[in-house]
Amino acid sequence: MTQILPLGSQSDDAIEALLDAAFGTDRRGRTAYLIRKEMKWLPELSYAALDDGGDLIGTLQSWPVALHSQDGTVRPLVMVGPVAVRPDQQKGGFGRAMMDAVVQDARRLACPPLMMIGDPEYYGRFWGFSAEGTAKWQAPGTVEARRLLALVVDGGTLPEVGMLGPRITQMV
Ligand SMILES: CC(C)(COP(=O)(O)OP(=O)(O)OC[C@H]1O[C@@H](n2cnc3c(N)ncnc32)[C@H](O)[C@@H]1OP(=O)(O)O)[C@@H](O)C(=O)NCCC(=O)NCCS
Image 1 (tube, helix red, strand yellow):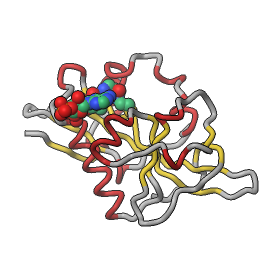
Image 2 (image 1 turned 45 degrees about the vertical axis):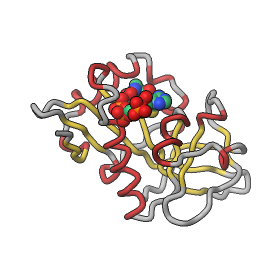
Image 3 (image 1 turned 60 degrees about the vertical axis):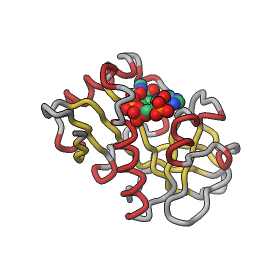
Image 4 (image 1 turned 90 degrees about the vertical axis):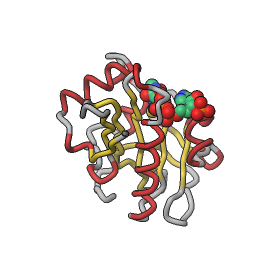
């Protein structure tokens, strides 16, 4: 049975090894890493998936980021990802279970909008993430517009324009 636990229950080494297996060891140059540069993942919105034997087979991390406008406005966002499932366990429902957890908890906590760089065919299909409201968002690196996704979880609205980057003042 899938067990979803807070990610803080796992060692940093185990998390990093799983991310290397899912994304490769050259993953740190990706735009997603620049957006959340020097931030720490949010323990209340980050998860581990364990198999029957208690082995780590999935991780999901969330980060405090923001959209920074030219007029100095800073709109908080929560960046979701990487979402990673060990290659030999993919398509077994573990990604969905971790994503269900983060969307449910973010709604419960009335968090700022969730955002991610990911496949709309997956994150749109199951949770309603969409690139519709992010067309005027900029990133500190290359990002395919259709893969820059957002989801409002607090009944509010998405910020329209700005540059994605780390959020210095932390809040969920
Ligand atoms: C993407 C990932 C997190 C999905 O988790 P998973 O546990 O393998 O998948 P799930 O069991 O939750 O979901 C399975 C369903 O989603 C679909 N799906 C999985 N990944 C998909 C993708 N990238 N695009 C579209 N559909 C996808 C499957 O086809 C399957 O559909 P079906 O039920 O109709 O057969 C996982 O495959 C993974 O770690 N991939 C490598 C790393 C990665 O690309 N991460 C995402 C970027 S942050």
